[in-house]
Image (cartoon, rainbow, N blue to C red; front, side, top):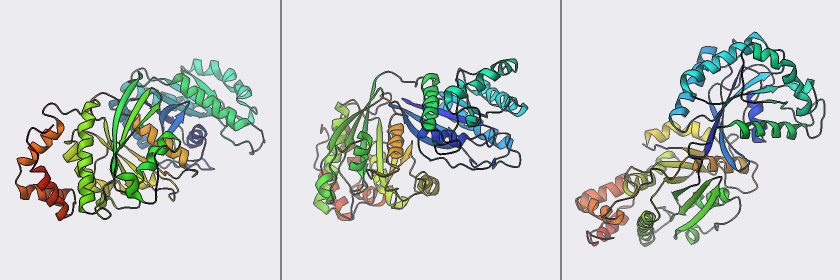
Length: 451
């Protein structure tokens, strides 16, 4: 994994969400003008900083009292659970503690002890840094705001509050009082530098390569996803979807130290393809999986779905690739497209998580995006898909031993009765009966030792 997890913590009302928006360079996290908390649970925001990918995690405010959406104990529990979960999966690479730029108060000391106490029990060696906010009253630039740290450094030391780094900032825009041209960009640069300099390296920081199979229905936006990752148009997009989707293409990208190879597969859509076209698409998908063995195996299946479709409509293609092609051994991540009308694209995932689970669609990760070039959420979407992809590395690729994947595939199906094969294709993968009949007829003609 080359995506770093950055966890933001602090008291209620210190401006954690505003700090996140400053890091991202746009308003994604909900903020409030008063001291009340607006983050009731953990929230994840993908970001790209100097070609490195990050997940920035917002957490409920501590010491919230009656002002917070989550009581102090609940907020601490959410933080503890998040750190535990991340540590067991991809790791925690930096913990950012936010404080308001006043004198060092008792509440600040309590928050520091609470958070570092959690870290001491759960994490080993994770850097903790301080971000001091609301310093526009002290000076007009981060250079002048640094005086807060100079004035309070001895007090922090006396209270045994140790940090691996710090940034003294304001989250105000240049137009806010006092108006200061360039202030926002300087503060953004300061906090991004803090993150770059103090974050732990990813668990797999060396050069690596992952192989990804991108699949989905015709019109789900697979070509747009390829272009989104690349940051330019490298895959053709046509109003006539069949022109672009009946052939597989290989695209390669470098994201940080990760070389990502994506096979854009044929589009599958029983409503738009006739029997011969659907059969051709399935044959090409089978050949693709065989070719991937010679490329070193599959790291990830990336399922591209149209956010305007119901989760039920996704179930057939999910099962076809996960259960049949990947033998349940390759993780599937979902990239949800056509979300440009959502105020917050991640809301789609919150609304549909239960429905996906009800239809047995389990995702190893997800990205909610728009592939519409020029859209205000385009950069956010690129950050999301890049962060998703760089969670996976070359370890654990799925490679079918001899006999080859294709030979195994034929043998496994020949062990079933014809009626059972048709049942699986029609009931679980939602193929049309006439398509399932022809596919079974083809498979029954293939020798058992097919390569």
